[in-house]
Amino acid sequence: QTGLGRTAAGQCDACRAGTFQTGSGMRFATRCVLCDPGTYSTAPGAVAPGNCSSCAAGTFQSSSGMSMCAGCADGMFQSSPGATLCNPAHPQLDLALLLELTAPAN
Image (cartoon, rainbow, N blue to C red; front, side, top):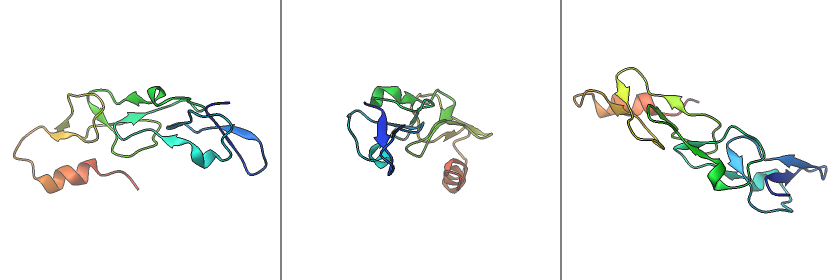
């Protein structure tokens, strides 16, 4: 069945949120495909890349395989959907600060 990956015990488990699987009969959950940066998926067991939604304007996602998007930090904005970073609200803002504010959390 699509959207599932097989565990070591031979049971089928849904691909986790932030991933999808278009094929059936997959042997391992590691075969689940990550949603691209700028997109997310909240539902486990997604069956197509179309199940990954674009981040809304005002949010971003710089990593792949995520189940949510993050809001832009104070002093930053993003007017386009599907963004992988936010832009400085003031063009004078230092690029290093921009990179620091949009870096994925560890």
